[in-house]
Amino acid sequence: MIHQFIKGTTEATFVLLHGTGGTEQDLIPLAKELDPNVNILTLRGDVLENGMSRFFRRHAEGVLDLEDLKKQTERFLAFLDEAAAEYGIDRDKMIPLGYSNGANLIGSALYRENAFKASLLFHPMVPDRSLTLPSLSGANVFISAGERDPICPKTETEELTSTLRTAGADVELFYHGGGHELRMEEVEAARTWVTSYIG
Image 1 (cartoon, rainbow, N blue to C red):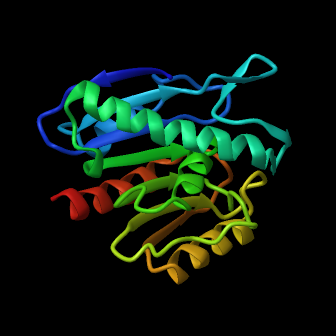
Image 2 (image 1 turned 90 degrees about the horizontal axis):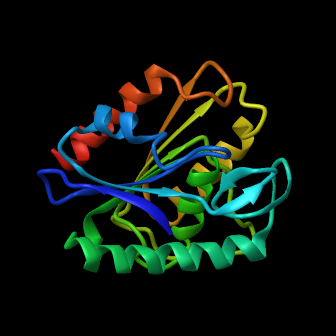
């Protein structure tokens, strides 16, 4: 996968996954805002939709291609194992951070056993209602969303949060008053969460 690794001074590593039409550069400023000392492994989606980079296909706005999502999820997790070995980083201390399409790939990965101990999902959807989550006891998840998000409606956010909590995850949910855009107040909430998790 197309990616960039930026060495930090801690054992933790942010794994960054952009939204539709983004690049591996998009979320680096956000990651540095959350914790400037953490390693960064940032990815670029190589599935193209009208020339825009994504991490998996969709049939239409809000309608995910579940077969491709499954395939790309397995590919993503395999890549992380390879990257851990290549860069000498701790796979168990990878913290994925995704926005929109990237958040949905992370959400899908959470349906695999022991995928991540901590994750940050900005404006995610429920990835696949046909699957059942494994036990997420001990997993920590930060979710942020917009109260008036036309792409990821509040009902979608609430359903995902409830599903993760039912599986045992400790989920912190934050809303801002807008739509699908990232806002400073959710970045600040995420920074507080990261500080409490990483220390």
